[in-house]
Image 1: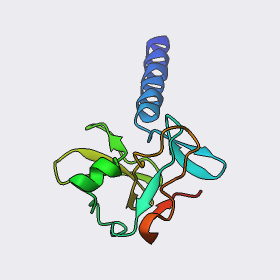
Image 2 (image 1 turned 180 degrees about the vertical axis):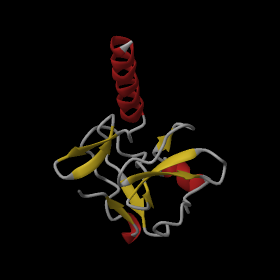
Image 3 (image 1 turned 135 degrees about the horizontal axis):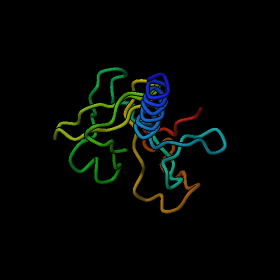
Length: 125
């Protein structure tokens, strides 16, 4: 009976670790800047109120500044939280600020949206 209980506990621990890993935000750091899995630079928008759980960038804005989307089942993880957009979809936020890419950035390392109109900024970490 002890072997079964130990094996069950080990299996439960592995599943919990796998689930936690699968729910982490798809974000990396590159030279002190946050990027998505493809290496594209991530930005914040000054019009987003920190900690509001809302994005102020919808419609045409979201076409130019695509939100960093989260899976419907994604869960908060440390400094990364999941917010609900106006259309009901989910988006990642970092320290209370929603995250976006910039559509003119075509390859990893591009940062052409930094300080755009003085309201869009790369996320430094």
